[in-house]
Image 1: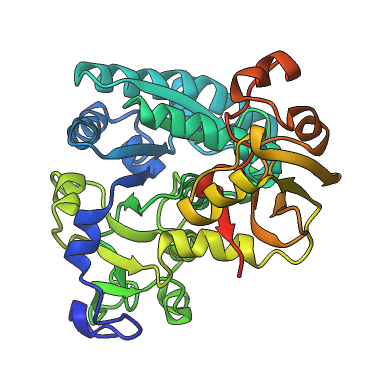
Image 2: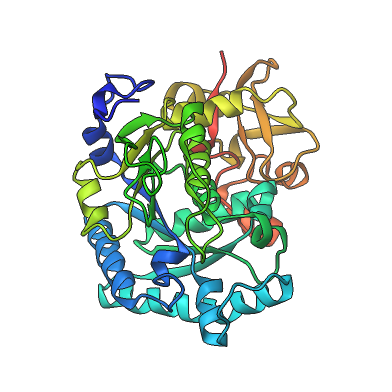
Length: 389
């Protein structure tokens, strides 16, 4: 690959990297342990303050920001006086529990100083693998973003085993980008970006400015972990970019100490390595739903609801449903059919089949009274719906 951004193989010349960065409205930022804890010496207050100031500036400009932050275990090790990362799961979990207190408090303090709200969200990969928990997490995060709050996300290391042992927050950052349909994933690391070889070992290594996310050659270029504190390396970032691209999010890998990196990226300045997703965001999400071969059920809608869905691109509301078939759970992909049995669309169900049967022909205001709770006002939101035919 060339070091010329526009000449890098596999990237469409029709894509303007600067415009892609400027257009990103929903951004997930991931920072690693070595940056957050200054290579394990304790939380880097100055760095967190700078990142928080940039996050606040972007939120006030109308963008939506999510911070995925490593550092809980490293901070816990420092507070417990441990010099080396323990191997026992119970000790790792204990370190995470201790360190999480300081980590979240630091972000909350620095964001509050910028007059921006924050929220702690602890996730595991299992939360995003389970359909119902996936939708619950998505709804929570989108609600926080609507209110101008910056969610600070970390893995729930105190209750899981495999995420600590095998996982990494690069992957979590990509999963969060998929979860909220982010435009851009920014991975801040202790390297300037991606090189054709390890620059610490090969002085002839070329810097990669722009490439296609998912290009298999990138994985060949990526080296192993370079920090004694974190669990990831450049390979995890390459794979995270590939995963994020699955939902249409591009990825930037950049040096976390770069002054005003987030602000400069959002203004279109080419910092670090940009890995461009080849599939547009909405197209990627809708293609996934359209490609589901096994549907667990369907709902039949009246003529009015059918017109609103097909002609106006509206969500499916409970009042438009006349019948429910099959047994499905919240988060399953189901079909929407008209009275003649023709499939009009499909999408993610916000309610189970049993609940949907109770909601047929009912107004949105009646949902809570019938079910005892209200997950969403819609049976299927238009963002989670794709037309057929």
